[in-house]
Length: 274
Ligand code: ATP
Image (cartoon, rainbow, N blue to C red; front, side, top):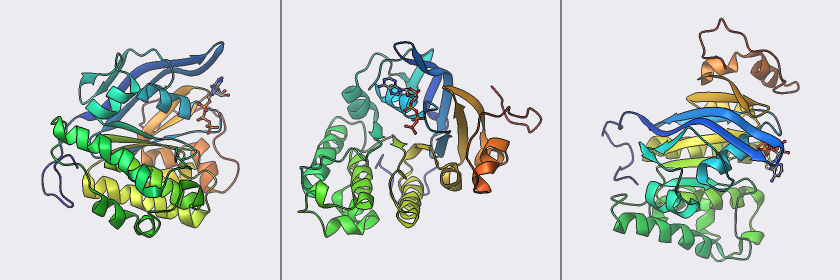
């Protein structure tokens, strides 16, 4: 993927893979995202954490062009994507969403679903966007369960396997960045942990940058390098995962009590505050 082999010694390209500045999303009178700015550095896992209804999914959907938005800047590796449709963002720039609810085509077999991803990956190879897309064998190494279920329909898979299929399909598209929306929803903690470990492995082995949206901030911050906290549609804090873990809103999650409340964010911890 991106011509990189596992554990490649090649230095990562400097600079952000994704830069979004001043993003607004509205559903009629509902201002779901306001002036949000997010940057994902090449070869990193960046998390977007916040409570239910904070605007995380709306921001992800806006980035891939699934809901209308306004932005001062939206670029992938320096290329302005604001005028591109969703398909062009996927095929030409590798901006790939793993949607919440897994986006699995339940009436298709595992093989058919993977082939959809593979087709985009082949297009990206042929058009010179990437030197080599990930192949099926590499995907089955990451998700061995899927190898045994190739002929099953999506609806015959467990929730965890459906999530694996959604990530596998996205990986076959040779993403430059994976936008992963709430992978933990509806899954048992053990399964979720496995999926997060695989996402971490994907980032390290294949240098695919990840923007991870997650309500379970504790889990997200275990794999993230950097994180943004979103409340009521606004990014209210950002910092390294270690810094964000120390925020009052996030510490609640670590203590196992109600997560992410709209509390004021301290200004003396060295993080950028909004
Ligand atoms: P969740 O974890 O519940 O998905 P979220 O942080 O991803 O929460 P969003 O789903 O982006 O939040 O929702 C942000 C706000 O926008 C909420 O007030 C929600 O009710 C509203 N909203 C989301 N989608 C729509 C829609 N299609 N039409 C109208 N309002 C919407």
